[in-house]
Image 1 (cartoon, rainbow, N blue to C red):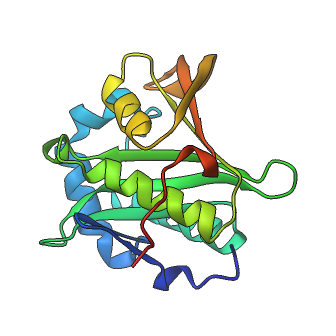
Image 2: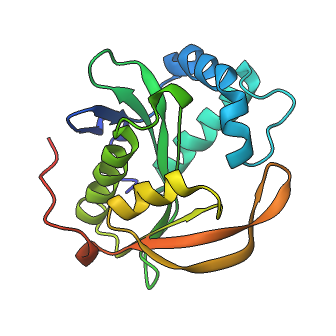
Length: 195
C-alpha cells in the first residue's frame, strides 16, 4: 500500500466521502470529538488528559500519516457528501501481507449522525477498497458485547460473527471482552465499483 499517494485516495458513496486526514482538519476534528466526548468515551481506549488538543492531533496525525506511508494502516475521515461536514472516522490498522494478508477495522461516528446509514456505507466502501485495491483476504473487527448498533452495521456489511475474545482490548481504562467479526471477499454480494 505504501506505493499509493494516499492524499489522492477518495472513496465516494451516495452519502459519504472518505479521504485521509489533512492538517487543516484539526479544528473540525477537535470540535466534533470535544462536543461528543460523552458519546465516544465509553467505546474507545482511555482518553488522555489533553484529548482533542493541538498536541493530541499532532501525535495522531503523525501516526496516521506514518501508517499510510509504511502500508500498515489507512485512516479515512468520513464526510457528509452533501455539506462536506466531518461525521467521523474509519480505518484499517495492523495491515499485514504474507500468510495473514489481513487488517483490523475500526470506526467512530458523531452522535447526531447515527442511524442514517453513513457508517454502513463507509464500512462497505473501505471493504471494497481493501479487497480490491489492497487485495486483502480478510478484514476483522471487534465490538463490545453491548454495542449492538456496531454489530448491526457489521452484519449489514456482510461481516460474520466468529466468537468472543476475552479481555481483548483496553476500552475506557479497562480490559474488555469483544465480539469478533470478520469479512472475506466472498462474504459480500457483488459490490458496486468505486467512483
